[in-house]
Length: 294
Image (cartoon, one colour):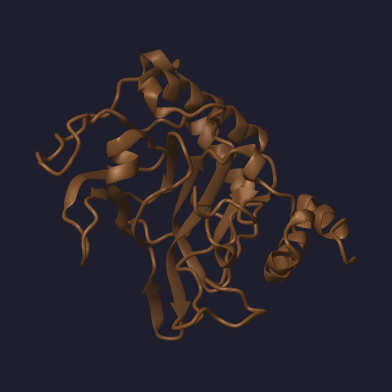
């Protein structure tokens, strides 16, 4: 892989002038074709070994929150470092830090190697003020974007609405597969107008941090192209994946709890998922076998 210093940054369109946005627009790095063909092949081979989960938004073992209906997530997912199960509520300091980031599998060697390079690049190109003490990219959410397969055809689910990543410090995002239309928007009712639109091609990297790109603006995947009409990654029943995105973030280790030390209700909420993960993962099999109540 080329040395970090020799890689030219991808050209970025200008930030739309908006008086409601901060004047400081630092904190965004976009690198097309960042991943080398050899690293991509190794990473894809490892991804093919996974068995992604279809999660439900809420617990299936206790009453639904008032006014809510049970629903599955739009896409299958897999987490490394820690697993933030949807039914426990995602990590969102300061109001939600307890019993929501559950110890998960470590990064495989190829990913650990790439993460070290992402961290080095972040520290070199992002403002020092955007980092928090102890920061590292110790968490990875793997999203599988594609279409649900139905009796009448395909239902495109390759999108994600306006949201922010609440984990402290810079975030890294690595794209594989079909091009995604990625946008930063101002938060407003009915969806905001894009402040910046970035086509994320296969093997591209984004780093973002700071008060503008991470705290003020929301981001979304507006759509994912389907030009190749192929399938990507591990087979998922009833689903055709055409893009895989790996998002790396930082959760302070003090906020990550082993499955066996979750509060009883939280452990019961995710027991079914842990059992399913244990069918294909040695890490989760050990976790399940050593949990209280076995």
